[in-house]
Length: 413
Image (cartoon, rainbow, N blue to C red; front, side, top):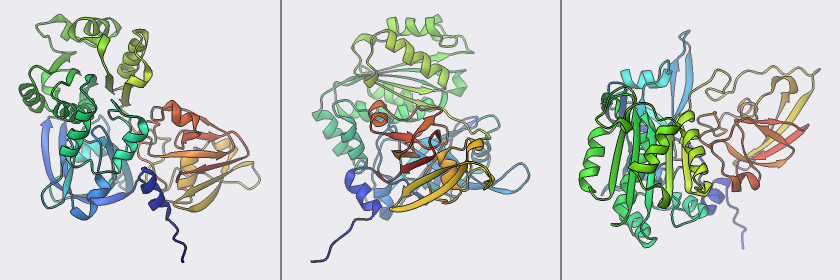
């Protein structure tokens, strides 16, 4: 009887963890949300539907080639949260919808807002991310569901309803509404007794993304959804809803606008300062960390790897180096990294293999996660891995730097 061996990808599928990979998708619609934000819809053909199953709150990485400041073509990747609840069309196809807000100086977001149109194609990575509801189920179950048919809302609703209702609160700022609106839609539809409160911060009313969609959602669930718009540069009738959210205002909001003492799950999405303020405040109020989900904005930095080659590093054989060994798709690679360069494991691996998975390279998304098999590393930042993953030896390779002569990581585990 012949021995059947699983490929690394098949093994990952069986274990419930999908190997991130890019597929070329066609843009079917570009819709203007605000003066500086658009919603982009991608068609997912039937044959790729399984690669793009997702849980509300997850994100995709987009990849394209754009000219840099010198006019040279340059591969660029940016991650954007999916803003719609999962659904499948009668022909078996589906869609991915993301919102792209123009950042000051942002190469990709500026190009997309000015030039992206229906009919264009972009490389889209299979959905990733842990900013999802875990109410009534453990993390392993959530990760397994990513591989199941989450594009069937009737199945999702049935599963959620069987787990009981819940009380949820989200605090979002600007484009942080993108994953939150998908989560809210799904949880509210799943159980007739679920309650959802949203605190949404923006500069002014004209900056509110998905304003009409939020109003429609409020009309659909008037007794179970509460939306509190906080505008920092526009006066509202209620003083509590005017001005920036600082520690004092947040305490007031938690004490008066929402019932903060009986919340099953919290969702925080926005810039680092706001998310950290919310986390600290909730911790002071006794909220357990496992009940708080958060996702941060991230932006490119010059020292982060861009494209598929990693930033250049000159290896001088006369200088000391770290030996970095990595396993990806069942194949083993090795690369020498100069000790003086303080190069990340991701950057080193990209110099010898172009398909090493990553998206934000800022310690936020978790796409570059790998298990540390041998050696030791230090991580600069970590906003993606939870404590149980750290305890099992997982690291973010974009933030990890060797501290031992030899280091081995496994992207396949």
